[in-house]
Image (cartoon, rainbow, N blue to C red):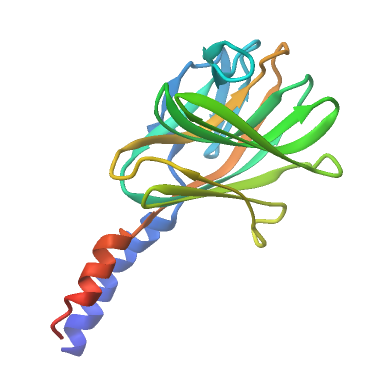
Length: 220
């Protein structure tokens, strides 16, 4: 029995290692590919497309869906995070993480430069967009953004050190539906800027409903 347990542990270890490792960027896809971008050492750099954004209807009365988004397709529940740094230049320049079902249903969260100040920004879109910000006292050299998708909700967090995470938004997103998840940047008013994304990681989380069912129906 001890030999079997040792064999199983050894067999599972590579799977666990892969599950917790960084997402391979060369396996991902572009939506609105920018003119200039590069992947080196599993780090993505891009020059953000000028006059590009994601927004639907509310307040401004227009819809745009043309900013760079580098994504992979995921189902179920997961945790995703990335380290983001950028040379923001113009009002509304932004970079972060996005979860997207389609052009009417997506959530983006990250840093946004507004009127000379840096803000933690979240836009939740279901038919129409809303916008919430948390001001930052000074310009950070980089920031970590993390999202946790559980059932029909996504929680977004930020961190300056990848250790202490503070919640910035909880938003609804349809569950049991695959989503595009990845790295987004936009320059709605400006002529573009350099953005860099490091340590992009997606970690699978066991489905809560199934885990509850297994616990309640454990015959051992």
